Every structure is written in C-alpha cells, then in structure tokens.
Amino acid sequence: MNISTLYETDFNVWIQENITLLKQSRFNEIDADHLIEELEDMAKKDRRELMSRFIILIADLLKWQYQVTHRSNSWRSSIDENRVQIELLLDDVPSLKADFSEVIKDAYQKAVKLAAKETGLESSSFPENCCYTENQLLNEDFYP
Image (cartoon, rainbow, N blue to C red):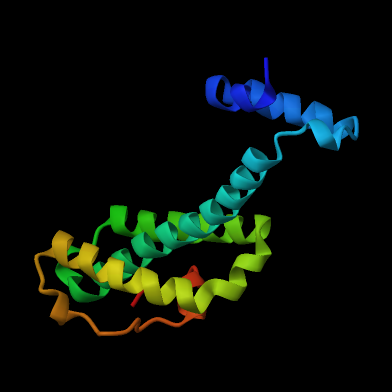
C-alpha cells in the first residue's frame, strides 16, 4: 500500500511507517507533503491550547472580580487548574512565551464574551483591554 494512501486509511500506521523510514534514513520514501502538514498543525495546536487556557483563566478571573457574591470553589479550582496547565504547556514549549502578549490580547476578547454570558453582565461591564498583567495571570496567589 502506498504511504500516502495510509495517511487517509490508517493514520497511526502512517505515523509508524514514516518513523521507520526516517530512522532508516530513507528520506525519499517518506510522505513529505502530509508530514509537513502534520508538523504545521502540531505547532498551531500548542498555540490554540495556550489560547484556550487563557480564555478560561481570564473569564474565571473576571467572574471572580465582578461577581464577588457568587465566588465558588469551582471557580478557584478552574483558575488554579488553568494556571497549572499553562505552566506545563510552557515547560514543554517555552517558545510560546514569545506570543504571550498577542495570545492574551486575543484571549481577552473571547474571555469577556464568555464571562458576560456566564454572569449575565453586559460585556461593557468589563474593561476594554485585559486588566491583568502576565505575572498576575500566572501568579498562583493572585485573585482579583
């Protein structure tokens, strides 16, 4: 069976076959086009994961700050969990730190929508730009 066909029919076998070919230095036989595509997707996946974690973290911090009477252990746990997951992701992919400002900016707009939806507050109730610093977002003792 053609290695390109394996990509469409059995992804795991396709991966194993390409690993074998790479280990044997049989570079002309690898499925380069699909391999490049997968590597590009892997890089995007890490950034999406960071974005997702920041959206939830910021939304929870906004809820914590703007709905004081509704604070709960589940919000605190979610804040703590997302900080841990961001830290683990950064340990694995330290180069993501270079994108922090942009990721936080993009995440903030989505977090405001999420916080507004979950709290019933208007989006305009929250600051226009992220009111938390990078250090505050990652500081395990910071709760606004």
